[in-house]
Image 1 (cartoon, rainbow, N blue to C red):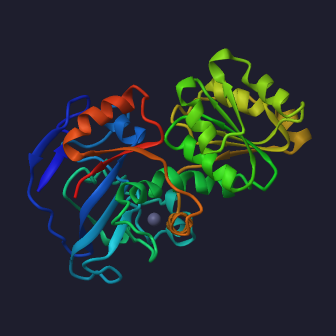
Image 2 (cartoon, rainbow, N blue to C red; image 1 turned 180 degrees about the vertical axis):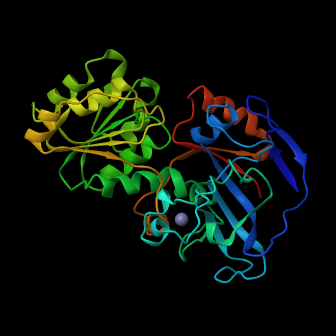
Image 3 (spheres, helix red, strand yellow; image 1 turned 30 degrees about the vertical axis):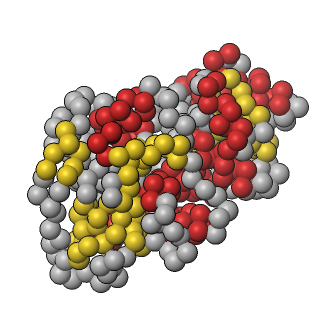
Length: 343
Ligand SMILES: [Zn+2]
């Protein structure tokens, strides 16, 4: 099969022929129709997230099962599928109690510790594939359907994690990013008042289109003050930080009102200082959020199937153009998600 292979971090892709994957016991192989191109996998290419090489990256797939190995039930040849991102075990206490991202036997990630979707075929443990629901026209929209598993499901989970209710004010830090912009969309869908915060002013129009009622240019500084002004001093109900530097986290914490909730899921992962007295007096919550459960992916797929939300894939390219797509990702020039069309 044709595959886009990375021999090492910080090297260009090589479009090359590799052996077709063969489904062993408990495994299945899917033909890949499309695969999302987000910043997480660009971090792998750029060496900022560790991986094993050579590697075929990509996890936001739409595919069709072409082979199932011995012992696999629940998947049949011809099934439309997407993929769960974590190679979780499916058996531990966390996997069995709907906390799958916290699996204690995790084998890593699709496209990081095993080969992913930048290829004509992908082989995974069968339980990592997720069958697409009826009513989702994945053949007509494989790129959009592929990115649901991460770009849309991750912010969908955050709505519940932060207990967002209609009429509340939700501030999204890093709103112009691929997941941030989908967070705006989902917060609007949840009938919140939505404030987008970013330094990328070229993405503000897209933020407004996605659902932001207001935008705040973080490069001007004073973000907490701007958020307090926009809420007449009350503060925001929910601040969601897709950046998570010390500066964004402290601004997010200072912008919270009574019963405010701060959710951190940004990759910077820096430390920050908050006032415990403010937290106590206002009964505020600090929350971490990582990837999603299978049930959250299924619920998000259903939302798209019902036409309530539509993923923002602004550009779709053939597999051969992966290098150019990743150069744009690195420069921060992609609005929403880019995707590669493979079959
Ligand atoms: Zn587990």
